[in-house]
Image (cartoon, rainbow, N blue to C red; front, side, top):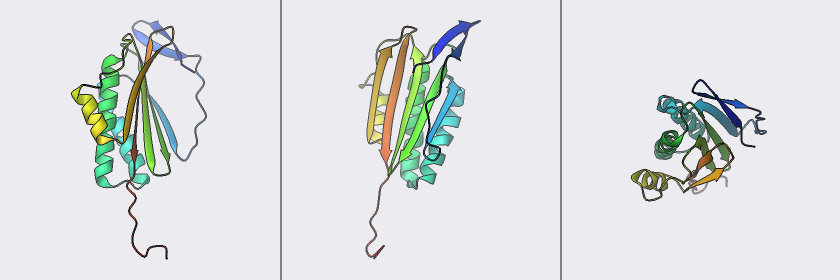
Length: 157
């Protein structure tokens, strides 16, 4: 369900929103002001989740950069004073991220930009889409990175 937002004095407030059920062990959802000042928080969360999921150091660094780029792209499209939703899911050997903002721009982020090249290089999959919701346009960027699983000869035997 898309939150309904109403503007009061330049700020956008979320109302009539019921959060989805989250599985406590492997899903985290954050709502932050759509402001570049919040990027360190999002980078820290993804790095912590990747560390706990036993991703290697290079993959953790890739995830930090990819999530930073995705959020930066979303923030630059967000309505002034609005929020950004970040959802992280860890399942099996994969960490997925979805970032969402409301925008007055009805086009998806360009797949020909340098930023998109960064996203597609650092992750195993990346996608963006826009859907109209009557109050603007919901812009989503989703990405995923799989953990490298190394088979150790003789392990488990």
